[in-house]
Length: 379
Image 1 (tube, rainbow, N blue to C red):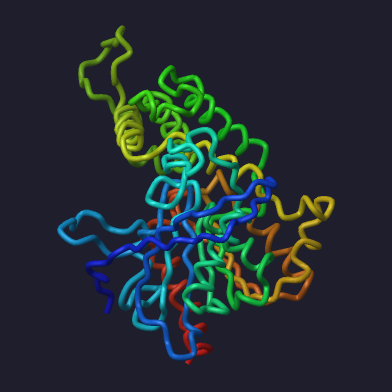
Image 2: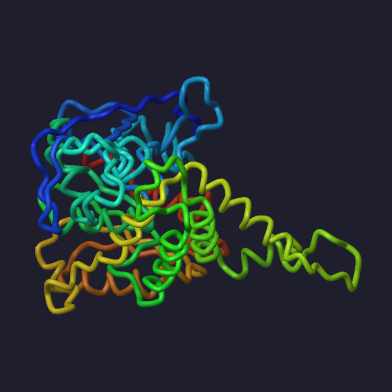
């Protein structure tokens, strides 16, 4: 029976060896926030790495002491008796470099100046995150993961793991993800970044020293992004064209909130602007844009996957127009060209891209069954 994992704690891991980044820059003396759930077995064979999406963190499941509302972002997936069962697996969540939830990022103090990095924080890529995560695995004595799993941007990291460290990944689970962004996706990211960059409180990324925050830009960026995470069907079901005013033939000349969907977007944007960091948003969306493992192989995704050894579970959702099923099918086709073991599912769900975060019996039962097979391998 499923139950809550209960109270969890995060820990900060420090790394002093310089990390060479794809940009050619390096980062020394950095911290990564880490949470673990379950017990690592004697063979160290039951470890699962969860890679997070753009605005998430290391806090995957459970809640913090005296904070019962602080549920992890994938709490419905990870826990005792849940699809990723903490009674069987040792699960690791790591906050990416450049994030704003405790790992070294733009808000951190630059040892060279004693001031926050701000815009001086180096550009990071999906592959940089994976290399940093590998150091966490090394520190924990984990030579090979039973699985690396993620949704959206997390799925890109899982795929990068299987390419970069093929001998260290037994199973790769890429949920609602893609092997590269489309031009339309890059365009959405650029509009969101432009909203932040044009905020008068941005100050070239050094707003920390001015004691302000580009809330307007962050709010707009989140509103733009949130529209792309939902499907038209889901938005119609939730809001339709419902208006706050029930009076017919009334018109709002002040451009205040008129429709319920407007209220929802403004609420989501305002909430996001309070807890997220603008520089982190810029870095993470650029990492999304840059990810393209086929680029080094003249655009041949099959060639990029030639050295992979993992088994794969690839899941897409019918109404996900941000990372549509066609992108997952492209990945599956390239893997099958190398005769990799691939399980593919296209879930007919109305919730758009956000479906990977929600509870759907078909989706969760599929993941549960897949991990049951992995558990037998770990025994």
